Length: 299
Image (cartoon, rainbow, N blue to C red; front, side, top):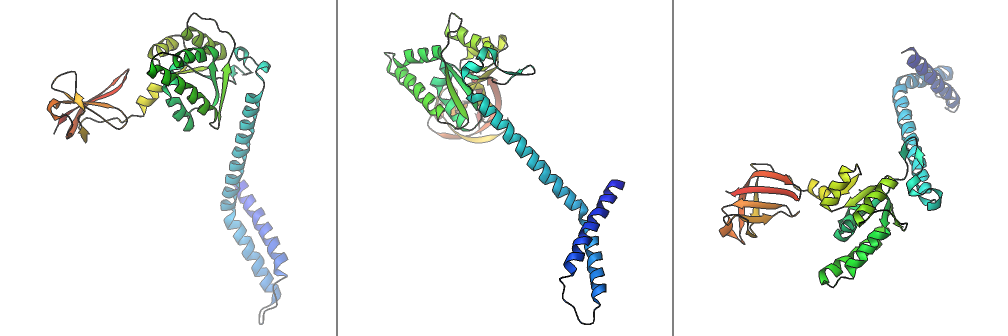
């Protein structure tokens, strides 16, 4: 409290001193003593300085913190950018630089399923994925096999996978590199998991089985399907909505429709309403490994 009072007095004195200097510029006024005018202006300025000190202090504090945070952010971003630009020979991924016990470079490793799926490109565009994205050479080899398949659909998906990689390279904030070193493992999945362990990286996949194995092995996994399910509409029992029935469900009496995000809704006693839009009420919602399922009834 005493410190604040002292600072208020100091600010008042500063304001008063400036008032004395500028009062010399005030032209003489009739019937007013110039000395009294200077005293009045000085005291008024000092009072203003004394009263506005909290606002001035708050403003200075806010500006100082903003400037400090900006400088720290820019410096840290520049340091990380320079680290990522270093040649690979400076720090092999198996021996990434450390700050304490935390590795600075923790790549995100794409597997074949995530590349072919293609949604990783849209996710990266939103900024949810940034930094170093690693594509192993053995994954590219598997992708090449898909692209050379005799099946037209597989061949198209494989070629689309290569297009996804090229588009991924163009996204700002994402650095795509090919890991061309040999990796231990009998299968592509084994090699992928061993690479993730060696680099302290995260595996990006849509493969359910790979996700399970990685979790058991304490390897971080970013499952695109899990992310997709997490952002889907979460219907609440009792909620009412309009739904177009598309086809019959597993039970011959059920009708099935879909929300805009692809969530399937099973409606009881709606098998005879295919092609029609019904008013339904949600009865329950289930989360399963394949996604979210919603059940409803006709109103």
